[in-house]
Length: 486
Image (tube, rainbow, N blue to C red; front, side):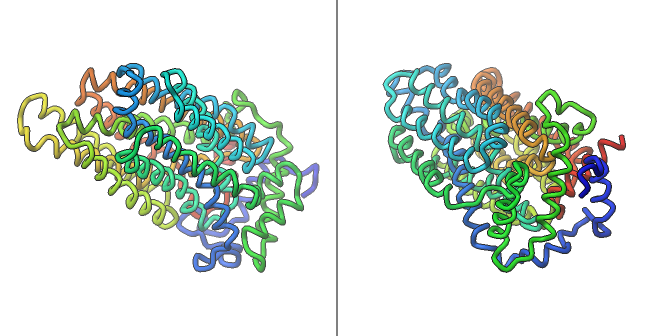
């Protein structure tokens, strides 16, 4: 391209005008799609790089899952009250907000790999602090450090995976982030039923070390390397990720041209994101994160045991049932991501979470009215399982997938930081307030969550674009063009 050539909006128009006919409908079939990656022959480097990255997702899940099985042991051993344990459960989200604020800048300046490494150092220090805690303050410090680490990981893992994968695999590969969160959470629930909370914290260190030791063996993101003008390294990384014999010329040229076009613009600060040009991307990214969290997920998974006890159901059976539903449904979501598309999965998921919360709320209403006493605990379990299963199939993973896809390279750091910060702020509000809401009204709490899930259905139907089958450059050009024309 001519260095004095078109502005990014002109480049977007050019890209949109030259895309294959029928673009965005169902395809994923394109010039490089068949040449460079067949589902039957995924390059080893791409598989290994994704696997290493999602160790961070497992760490994320184990941190979230830790507070539920550890609650009774920590409260007994350190003599903590409900309010103090609520601080412990929710302070991780404060740390995650700090990590989120730093995440975009660290990932932009030091690279995606280095950002994951920094995150794991925070997590390892945090797990050690919890393991050797004798007083509540050390617990809080450890949980805060883990929060900083997973705040970084929650941004950089899906962004890295989205940036290294071809478009026909990107949805499924990025959704593995949520699958590994689910695995980390579920295994922590199960292991926590049999081991002491200190031993559980030591076990939490293992996946952190695994990622830290394997990061040097994977390439950094070709798109980030192009952004920092390391073009030869970008081409080399892309070739490794697509396979020795793959023709990457078209994809490498598109990445380079699009990156250079947006690099002519000054990198936007968080305040600079509130421009017309980025309005749709920002609304979709932030809106999905708010609705994901206000649907109640962190309150439910942080305090699953106490929900089952309140409903009069066995906490151990309830927890095992949650794990039995969560992992298969998350796996199903991964398999469907690039077949059914993001929007349809989100809609099905949001309807399911709405019905699940409504069913759980109904069980607490019956309990308060002293009717169907034998039936209401089962109804609570069914409601929670429907909620968890529906959440796992779509709304758990897809907001992070879409967040990693919709922002152009010149604002990805700032936008990612803002979206991740909003997610963790809403998570803190829900996780801190959950016990107090349940004390106020168990039924009312789940009715509130059900209303938020119902609003999610409307939000997705009206505003969320389908990103299946498009390269990152095509998605961002489409959204940029939409904003410019409005």
